[in-house]
Image (tube, rainbow, N blue to C red; front, side):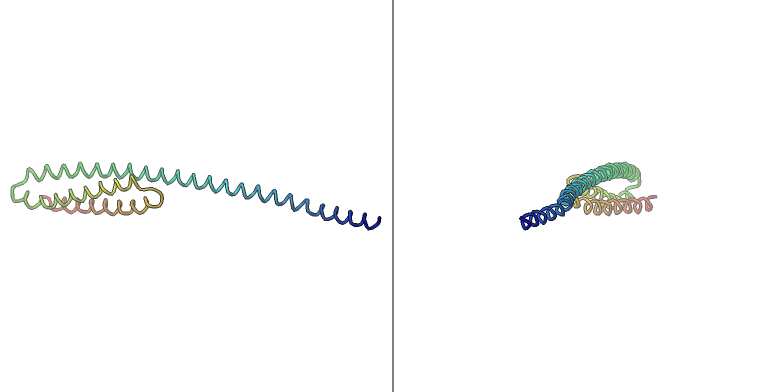
Length: 145
C-alpha cells in the first residue's frame, strides 16, 4: 500500500507542477492571438494611411496640372498675339510642352489605378514628369518677348 500512496503522491506532484505550465501555455496562446490581432490592425491602418496619402497626392497633382494647363493657355494666347516669325519659333516649344502635359496626364491615370507598393513607383514617375513639365514651362516663359 505504501507504494500505491507513493505513486499517487508522485503523480499528484507531477500534475501540480504542470498546472502553472498549462496556465502559461494558455497565456501564451492569448498573447499570440493578441499579437496576430494587433498585427492585422496595424496592416489595416497602414493600408488606410497609404490610401489617404495616395488620394491626397492625386488631388494635389490634379490641382498642379490644372494650374499648369491654365498657364499654357495663357502662353498660347501670348503666342497668338505675337508676330508670325515669333509664333513659328514658339509653336514648336509649345507643342513639346503640350506633349509633356499629356504625359503627366497619363502618369496621373496610372497613379489612379496603382495599388499597394506599386503606387509609390508611379508617384515617383509622376513627380519626375511634373517637374520636367514645370521646367519646360519656365524655360519657354523665359524666352517669351
